[in-house]
Length: 294
Length: 296
Image 1 (cartoon, rainbow over the protein chains, first blue to last red):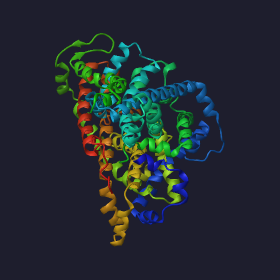
Image 2 (image 1 turned 180 degrees about the vertical axis):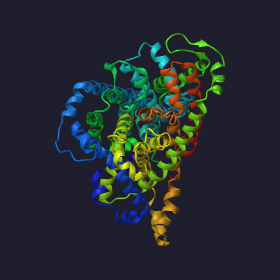
Image 3 (image 1 turned 90 degrees about the horizontal axis):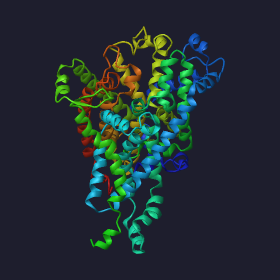
Image 4 (image 1 turned 180 degrees about the horizontal axis):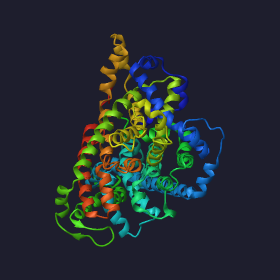
């Protein structure tokens, strides 16, 4: 499993690399060339974002995009927050958190039933989620718009949360079932012999043992919701319900020439994810790779 | 299995909430979109049944075939750019030296930015007047620095921006998969005197076969249905140079309020997405839920 490889404690890989491994990858010249080339391509725009966001508009226009800032300013950040970015940030946090809660709350019991259950209906449920991987959200956005308007949820955060969570479910169920399959049958059997019901097994065995997989799935669905553009675009309308990606777009169309301001907004929109990254780099990366590492 | 033992197993009731919830937003809409493709509906009133009118309109739509062609070009271009890069970077970053950790961190930073943020950053960077493109364009043979506003360069530029955004994710997949290749294989190869390049082609590449398939089909499904970046970078322009099918669907449905015709395009996207995803599930063995390296 990729999860277990990537979530090893950092010190283990950083301080004591197996010598054989080091030799194994050292002389891979084409990969090294590609890596240096790609490093430049990735680093220049990142440098541009950070440096420009702390420059004045005048300096940006006069000195070109890559100059070091001569006068450091946080004015752009203050300005962006004045323009309502706080609201967008709050909406995005609410939408992402609710999506994670709904996804995990529904996917874990379902995965437990899929791994342990024996009825034909449970197998059909699993097939439904496998099929679900095939359905692109873009292709069903029109009927979802119809359903959301008929449920009188149009232009609310709930309108974003429900379909976003629904579309995180297939991946969540796949990752969680493959994690739960690794739990030895003997554990379930031992507890069952002691008279534990499925609910007790779920609380005392499934929940604690699936914690790393839950974290991965939570991160994956949270990032999905955080980055979501299509559902907010089509299912909300008013400024008070706007999430960050739409806020950025709106900001660009209104203040398009204020590049330092726009890039300050970009940095603000990435800060929560950056915090998550610094807090749990390995968990975040394994969350992104979850289910595909095989 | 006795009835007592069956009772001790979790039943369908545990899976029902998730299944019904997903059915409401994932499966019911497919039926509804097929129905809507036979109606005339402006998004507000009641859909009116018009039979096959929208489907015959597809044949007369002068924009559809160019959009389909652009979608295919975008898909193929995305695959050709991202797969070799992500593969090489993934194998390379699976190594253990310290400086790799630093570089890998930088490689993965684009994952922290949303699609909207990345698209807007590149709109600024590629601005022919104030962006980087103005000064650096001449080194790439584009003296006027006009990348997104030129009908010949817009699509390659979109492919480049998509690569900037998604190569990190695919690199991550290849990195994780490379780390799982059993070291014994390399030990044996070294005893046989195989050099690094030989080892890459004879061991690494074949061992990554499943990952290549999984990553490729994700890319394919993604670029067939993905339209946010195109909308934000070029809005389909200049002219219709970057107009892809999902973007045309969005514009027909939510700008022109011709939901019936947009549903026709949506049904086509469902069909293409389904075919490609069945390939994912089959080729990667998700439906079997086993690892092909078990026992090694």
